[in-house]
Amino acid sequence: MNNTASYELIRARNMMQGWIEAEQAVMTGQEYWMGTRRLRRADLREIGRRIEYWKGEVDALEGNPRIRIKQIIPRDL
Image 1 (cartoon, rainbow, N blue to C red):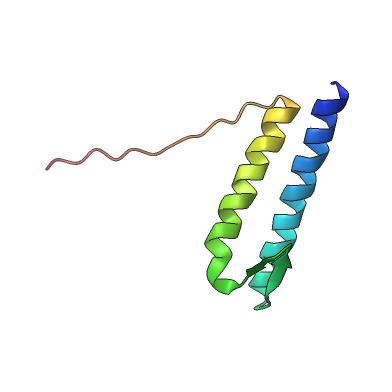
Image 2 (image 1 turned 90 degrees about the vertical axis):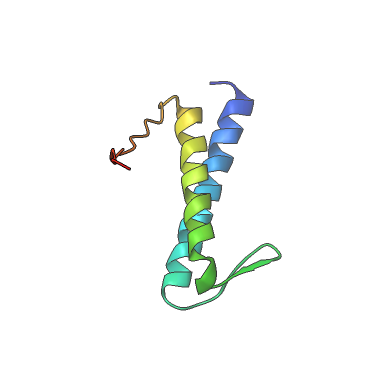
């Protein structure tokens, strides 16, 4: 892994960890500041999306393919 890829992996891991910490703070009813952005309980869904995004980035940089399984329920309309 070259230096740029290594740096990107470290950055992605740090970002994911930051969002995990934000989720933990919000779950206890607290507000959480990330840079200039204030996150509150109402933003828990957005925090979850950001964690998933950064997890995907970490997986991609580590070379782990991200497998997504979706359940499909056929309906007779």
